Amino acid sequence: MTEQLQRSEGSLALEAYWKSIRPEGGVPNRTDIVPADIPTLLPNILLMEAHPEPARKLHVRLAGTYLRDLWKIEPTGLDYLNFVPEGEKDEIYNGFVQACKQPCGRWRQVISNFADGGSVRVETTFFPLINNKGTDPLVIVYVSVMTQTHHIQDGGPTHLASYPAKAHWIDVGNGVPE
Image (cartoon, rainbow, N blue to C red; front, side, top):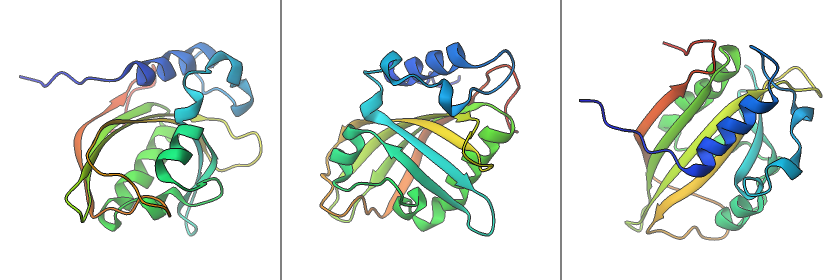
């Protein structure tokens, strides 16, 4: 029996919005996003640029207020992979790159464990965008904390490990990676 995945309303709303602005069979341009169309999602949104080898980083171009408040830092301009446990960086980076190449979306729910014994269950949903300011692919990401028993200290998230609780690709008509 397959476990039923439980995506949040915000995750589903980002998917619906992305589909509504994309050209038929294609990927929407970054400039197609109209913030006034998604005011309830904006606090939870990240825009990230996936820099290829040798840089291999996920450059945060924009972070919503919810995320800045949650992480207690301004992540804009930073490499998102700096906040990912070492053993997971390849999976996270490759997921973003694969979603941009396919193109398709990705939904993940992870549990991050911290040294103090606390944990945070986080949902992420992302879709590719055309980068009108460069050649590196962009992704729009919705992030939501579902449960939290750990409070992030000043300086940003630092955790021991994350464990995918659930994950799946989102087919938008172009198939999904194998």
